[in-house]
Amino acid sequence: MKTTKTALENAKTQLGEVVKILNLPPHVHALLEEPMRQLTVKFPVRMDDGSTRVFEGYRFQHNWATGATRGGTRFHKDETVDDVKALSMWMTVKNAVNDIPNGGAKGGVVVDPESLSKGELERLCRAYIRAIAPIVGPWNDFPGADIGTSAVTQSWMLDEWEAINLRNEPAGISGKAMPLGGSAGRAEATSLGVLFATREVANVMGLKVKGLKAVIQGFGKVGWNLAKLMERDGIKVIALSDVYGGIYNAEGFDVLDVNAHVQRTGKLAGYSKATKEISNAEILELECDVLVPAAVQSVITPENAPRVKAKMVIEGANGPTTTDAEAILLEKGIFIAPDVFSNSGGTQVAHFERVQNLHDNHWTEEEVNAKLEGIFKNVFKEIYAIHKEKKITMRMACWVKAISHIVEAMQYRGWI
Ligand code: NAD
Image (cartoon, rainbow, N blue to C red; front, side):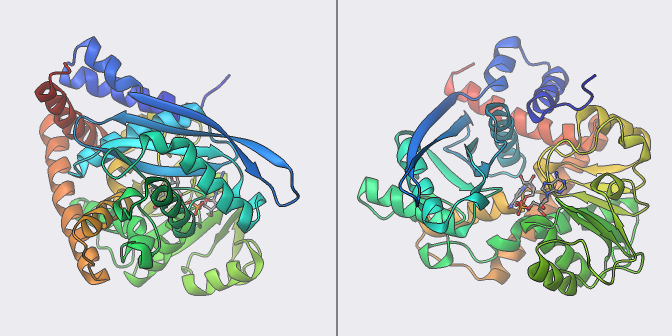
């Protein structure tokens, strides 16, 4: 029997819940349930050995009532149409929760980027942009980065878009390298946001941040930067994992030293100062204050949720907790900071990047981080108040804020 809901099933369940809370009519539900525009492309890429491979890619624009759409591009071997649909819906909500004046979109290519040479990856990025060029651009939909993409891939994509359109347009692609108009602070932004979310949750739970024990699943862009930032904040990082498995030490890790080991060996396993090695299933069930799933979706399920012992779950990944598992965690008194709020730091700084590009301006990392912190504090205050006042979950508080705003925009446009 299948017990784990997919990302799309979770997104649709979450939408269904907010539709009930806001008492929205069926045609509004139908409009929000699927992306308004879905482009699927097939494109050829010349491989280094002279052969040609045909790839499948997507760019789905979920809703643009509140502004041009934005959202990352995921290069992953298991990328599916349904995942891109779910992620595009979550982007619409994430932008609206965080007062970003854009709708949501998501893109992707079914590819394992690690299997390509640098030249093949560059040709794939350029071919993907040529294929989706008819619907993307600085005033309709601007792709950002996600799993498998980086400042390097984003820079190639921007260069290709500008070559096609014969003009310089840094606001057309976010997450690009700084000399092309990328923002200071982008690399750590998502993790810094997760840290800000942790501080806010600790505050309402009456816990001191210094001395908290944290467990982080995923040691990629989000997990590694977060571990470093948490250690700097006096939080003890007692367990870490990557796709190969995890490591544990009750005394907390020296994160820079762990990273040096990963740079040398390619994985966390084998780190000499770990007191034991653990699996990706075990890491989620450790005794701790803060659990941050920062790897993939649907990892906290009804099967393992009863054994989760953290005081708070701060979602770094998109969709790590299934809707059924969430109910179990809440029943146990665990505080959940939902993904559309807690991992929005990268989206927020991608928005800052666009603002700087459109103003021909550049902000320092201190300015970026200070603005980000202010936004996290304000948004948390707002959603926490909705959560208390309406007696709904923190996730539904986010969705209520977001969907009310989008519905109002659709009404003013005369769509509904
Ligand atoms: P990444 O590819 O840099 O790192 C992913 C990490 O997870 C790696 O350590 C990998 O080994 C590990 N991993 C992969 N599969 C796993 C599995 N099945 N079990 C356990 N670990 C596994 O990706 P990232 O950018 O750090 O993104 C991680 C999550 O955060 C994703 O859900 C992504 O959508 C979300 N997210 C990322 C950003 C961002 O700015 N990078 C922003 C918002 C949300």
